[in-house]
Length: 110
Length: 113
Image (cartoon, rainbow over all chains, first blue to last red; front, side, top):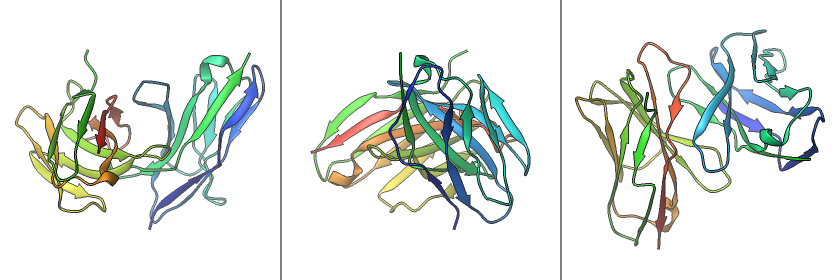
């Protein structure tokens, strides 16, 4: 069945450091891929998405490219800020039902 | 424009009891899904409602049931509560024509003692 695997956290970075959070997936068919973010005390918010192979999703300086050949959708940001501290979830889906990874906690220190 | 709203935000129950959680979707949305998020884990899909019918169901027992009302709001019911049902229950909504982005509420934190 479909599944998503994310890198283990927590990830601790200094402000302005480069961020990569790895995400790989197993899927039948051609699902869309998503990154959701959960800030402390808040619900999940869509960060970015890609609907087909080689698509790049981007938002707020974050980027991720749908790589079918490596079944990956790694999240990257060139320069993180303290305000980016949150839990990040990779997810896949194509019928409104999403399958989530276990989440990666990012802590950015000043 | 109100987003997805859920109630109650926190509740405590004891084993064997029953609980009902409520959700109002974002304005203009007609499809509601429920997810269970255990501590430190990603959300797991419970079921999805559209046109007042359950359309998809995840790997959850029949103790978990739901309902969608004509105004698109929804309820999640859990019977015969177990300790393992302690979790954050998230409601998400979307328009039926958009199979991608879900809008999530802040969740209902259920603790079973």
